[in-house]
Length: 299
Ligand code: GDP
Image (cartoon, rainbow, N blue to C red; front, side):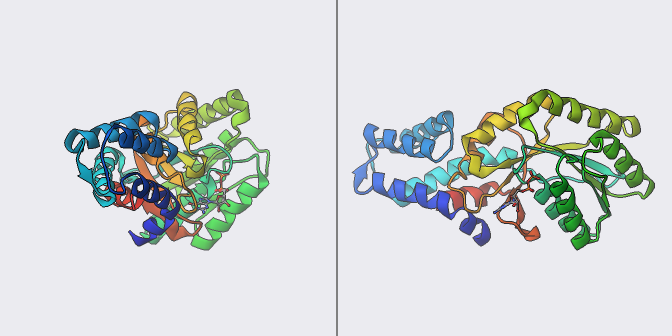
């Protein structure tokens, strides 16, 4: 809880200071409600969600004296309720050898890092993990994944930069099956400026995986950078057109004032949030808890 709280400091001070400013010895009147709604929108909670939260508060407290603490805790309770349905841990089915997770997202969102963190955590739980360096466009992404693999003694299936990503994914699944791995995490390229090509590539990867396992990939994780705020919402919409996204990981909550975007994501897209990134270390990928997040966000 403390680590998340620290990570969300910039988001929570913005909200906390704002709420303190609005509700300092003041009734919860129409003007105050409007200011609150604006503050929530500016904190990336989304227009519809911000209106809903303000309305909920008005239901029981309109024209009454309220303290900033009371407002914060009422909002935290409401936000927790909104987040509860999407706070779903990533489940790795033990009967699958391997459980295949395709990891997608724009360049820089934190795909490779998230895969590295997940690999380390799962390996420490005793699972046999394999990685596929499917972002074959960037030599740096391949190297970065190899470094994570070495660190956790997790094998990385990689080819030279420019190699066919689908071919690599096919071979990686072959190897993972042969060696009865529990979990295969596949990195992908994130070139969103060329949507058509990216879609073709992601679909080809899925096709070749299904040749070996009809149910693969078992998860398609979309990694989003929280610092991009409202843009993260657009990225979900875009990636949903490219591939059947099954869940989200939201990274870089540390040092972002836009943590509220998680609430907007939950309300608009309803996709499971499997984990959040609060730093660059392996331990900084955390399960997503609705209650902890809501409390940390509202200070
Ligand atoms: P990719 O292009 O999507 O594979 O993105 P990378 O995994 O290469 O990440 C881009 C940068 O973001 C790297 O410098 C990572 O260390 C950093 N990063 C990823 N996740 C987090 C996080 O949760 N917090 C912070 N502070 N940095 C992160």
